[in-house]
Image (cartoon, rainbow, N blue to C red):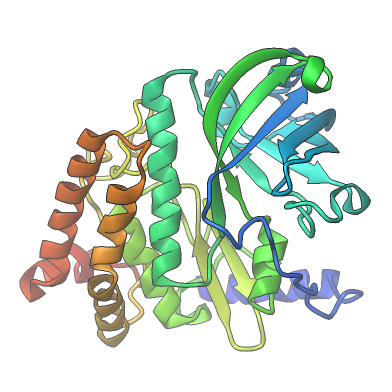
Length: 344
């Protein structure tokens, strides 16, 4: 039995399990992710208790989100939050957060229509890790320039309060990254998230399979697996199954202090690019390379235009991406760096 056949079996099981819900979730337009403007808000909860939620049992805890509306009036939203993640959950002083809104509480607010967006936080309370977060935000934005089939994001500046509402004790004020809920992202594409592992190239839309592989190479991210659904989501709609890349904090383009390649890989530094994607065909690679070339100036401008990003990091990112563009525009390097390493 081919590995791809295992995926088809898993897909059939997933489809059967959702037989009671055959229609895709209706997508309501999102005010939160319709804008690229920085959003500022306060998030108050029992941080001391939240920071202890590192095991398999991570309860939702009561919280309050407050911001100033466009009309100048104060807006206060009750919600629930819990810790999430894998590595960052275990190793970061400030873990990533899953937000959980009640529909009635967010009607008429900028969060209207949202359900459970992710909040990616600073790992450690210092400038270095905040710069890492800003660079991860920019990788998401670069991805969205290249394809609409991916998570929308929005940059936030959050004041964290330990306690109840504005009466809580200030803990930190840092940039954070709001990430679109997976189910809403899939609904925007007229599809659903599927949890079937084992997909091979022939099971997936070839262009977006090439896009994921090349984008991960662009970012120098080897911390993903399409068949293992590690930092990869799959969307199924009436046309095909699409792989979606997310979670780029281990990429060489960022160079976070904790990021290290898997010891099984033939690289010793995350900044060394290694293509680990599938081989959907030369024609699809050519189309993806053309998309990258078309969006090159816009991608570089993302870094130039983000004022909180340190100017040295802007220069470093541009130089790092220059190396990527030298590869994809040199047929010999495409063959040796990508085609000779692609899987399947």
